[in-house]
Length: 124
Image 1: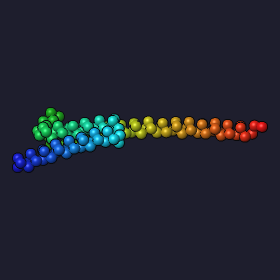
Image 2 (image 1 turned 90 degrees about the vertical axis):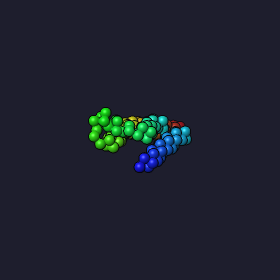
Image 3 (image 1 turned 120 degrees about the horizontal axis):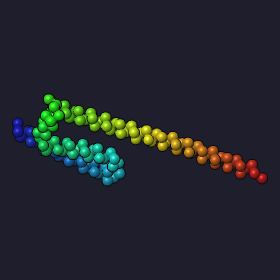
Image 4 (image 1 turned 180 degrees about the vertical axis):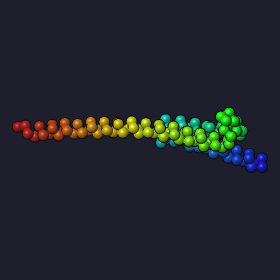
């Protein structure tokens, strides 16, 4: 039984390290923005911490008064998802406003350009 537990621990450490390397590669290639990479790096660091510190989840659950330690994982994941969704909503709202402002500016510039064309063709 202990042999299986050590294999699972080694596998989880390896997966966390590989995932961290994938995140760093995506950042280096410019496919993942730095502001989003921080979230993924923190999540991977937490996974790596609990992969190395086998009793860590039980200790944290006891500190927080949670009876069933694996439910702490779901609570943390739910909290992270809510925070990330709020962040994405803020970014979406900001981009929506920028798109609206750009569309209005473009309409004004188009109107000015058309009025200049009309003014230059009607002049003798």
